[in-house]
Length: 251
Length: 251
DNA sequence: CCGCCGATTGCGTTCCACGCAACGACTAGT
DNA sequence: ACTAGTCGTTGCGTGGAACGCAATCGGCGG
Image 1 (tube, rainbow over the protein chains, first blue to last red):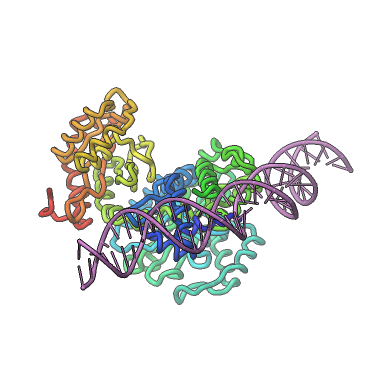
Image 2: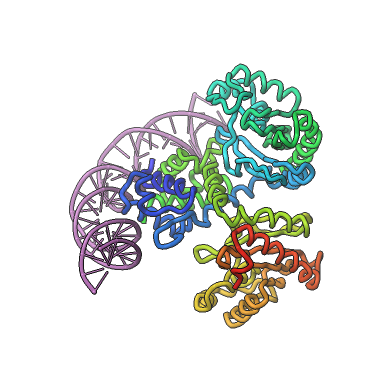
């Protein structure tokens, strides 16, 4: 483990919330400001941070570049994009693409709602495993033993009155999801929002990602949400087809 | 300057192009693989990289998180988004938002074209200063002396037959841009694409960013492109208003 | 079963990153 | 204008962190 690198990563994390001064960063990281200065200089030389003004630093363009270069090289994202955009335009609601990697579910693409109500989510943000529709889809696609291990490890933090709070209930829900081919989040994460999600599959039928539509309850009741399922499934199928084709040509 | 941090940043950069093995990374960075392993472990503990399989590493989710958290906290981007999206839906063409920071012009948002023809651009990518419409808008907004210093420092790499290749021509072009309030890229960057761009202004009339529309020449000729200018200017005005700009403050 | 390749670990050494303290630049208050 | 205070910056000596080496482990294929 590298101490200086670790400290630098802490700095980057702090800078993600907005410009910071040397002292703020030093205090946050718990090190001498001289040390922070040196680290920032190195980060600056590689364009990972840049000076905002005389005393503020902010994240630099290299980070955006890296992140988007890497996102762009994900076949799922590129392949699914047209289908998702179409779904977004058709329904007018927020559309997410999420994938499971490194033990967590992460949003890798997002199409904003046309309505004023916006969700607090973001590309790169982690989705809770126990109370989001995308996570249910992705976990439901795993082998049973892995599913169970994961279910046992989850900390079932209750977010709303509907949040699933036990491993048993979670596993039962996953079975239902696998059965019917799509997942629901019935206001289990946020009181005012419910979602439906479906899997995007690759060449050999493996689940690569999950698409979801999130709708404020004031705009659509439960039946209205379910009425979106056919469109969702069509989108998922179309995205899957796009992945089936490119997956063959890709390494 | 921190040696280990610097090496780690090189590793991240290498990983942005896709998964790599320990040896590949060690060779690329020119250090012993033990060193690489240690750095990767630190990066992994902070979710900046993750293991792809037994012998491949890839960028982790923390990077996406950071980048998008930071992008999200940019007021311009959030404020301008609705206007840009509307322009994208209205015209069907690629819409970019770019800003000048740290001596370079960077795309901070992008709305894809509805047509099959796609531009090779990306959020986080740097835009060339001498042959893109957004850069012209942003540089034209600077104080004359700064403009001249910048113009003198540019390496005028010719991209097409129309690319501006001298500082004199560039400065003349900037003057014209400042005069008429929008910029053109008449196939100066890519043969088949031309663009128009306009400034997004803040409260005190200062230029915060630039919006552009990029159109393949096969879809729209030069006059057709110019016909988009009113829509572009309306969008820019609407985005400016969202950023606190009042017409009274106009310079 | 063995040989090969790449990841991993233990270890001694070196040099690099650390904090201290002094300095410089700038601001604000009187 | 002077001064006090704040924050960024620099030089330096020291300790420990990061380095590369070499040995070991582990998986895969022959």
